[in-house]
Length: 237
Ligand code: F6R
Image 1 (spheres, helix red, strand yellow):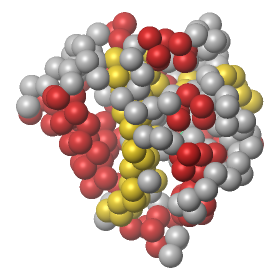
Image 2 (image 1 turned 60 degrees about the horizontal axis):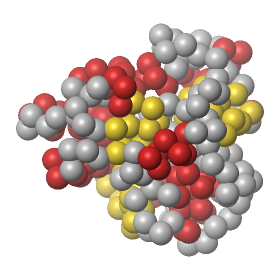
Image 3 (image 1 turned 90 degrees about the vertical axis):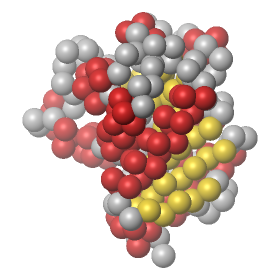
Image 4 (image 1 turned 45 degrees about the horizontal axis):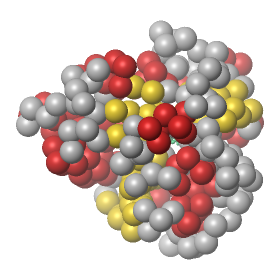
């Protein structure tokens, strides 16, 4: 696990965005694993900026998102499909059929689909204040592949900031499992702000602790790059 401490979330976005665009230029058929939430927003902004400036095409790129709520239409502003369209997909020349999101219908084949596409070359991750990655909450079985989850009160509360009221937050989601994520060929995790410090601290202890799902990345065979900002670092020291 490699730790990078940068000044701000904007700087992290520019740095990871630049690295991803370089990789797309090297391999136009790259398979990207994507996250939603606030953590990757500046990364997506940077990917769009650099790609448009350098005329980088995404027509052969495949994407697999980490998770999606159950019961929200693609047109619902809180759905992760809507989020991805608005923050990344619509600006670049992706083919619509190259995007994959886990759902009730495809969840039992999702890992197989990832494998058949050649596997995820770069997986982007955020981290929850309780150490969750995707919707894998504390004490999730590390062998889980893509599956359905009941969201914990903590996550519903965290995510309610995106909804009009807490009652509108779906209670179920489909998520890649920890096992799915660990199959990636390279991982970039972003954690910014003080409320992520405790989870990051646990993850950086170097061993797998089921109370902090992100710490499973210590068992990854691939490179894991952890990007945090000064504020998050302050809370770890
Ligand atoms: C989203 C996802 C979640 C978020 C996490 C952090 O696809 O998988 O695990 O990465 O909840 O959310 P933010 O970035 O909003 O702090």
